[in-house]
Image (cartoon, rainbow, N blue to C red; front, side, top):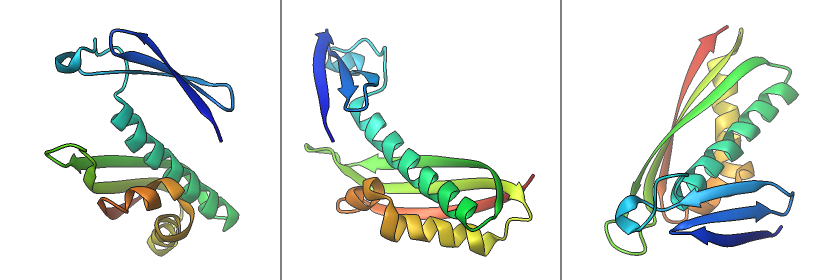
Length: 138
């Protein structure tokens, strides 16, 4: 996997991923940014959310569960001093489907957390990660 990050101007940067996609990042105004794009750490948190949501949907689909929606709401705390790593992350899953059994959704979340989601497993080296699950009929 590879990625190239180029300084654009001010404190904004553009990343070009190995798959050819562009992602813009910007700093907070107090750090010289213009608040035109997500912060790099926000993208790191979003990446973990995307990684685990991908796993949960894939696991449920492979188990032939009628999943129709998956949302992960992430809330993170960071260290007060540099490096300001994530110290706590809560992932709240809202999974929608017809006749979904809560235990099947919880199993998918646990498999992602313990085995498949490399992003959250990596972040778990510095942060306490907790999960909660809400199943919605639909």
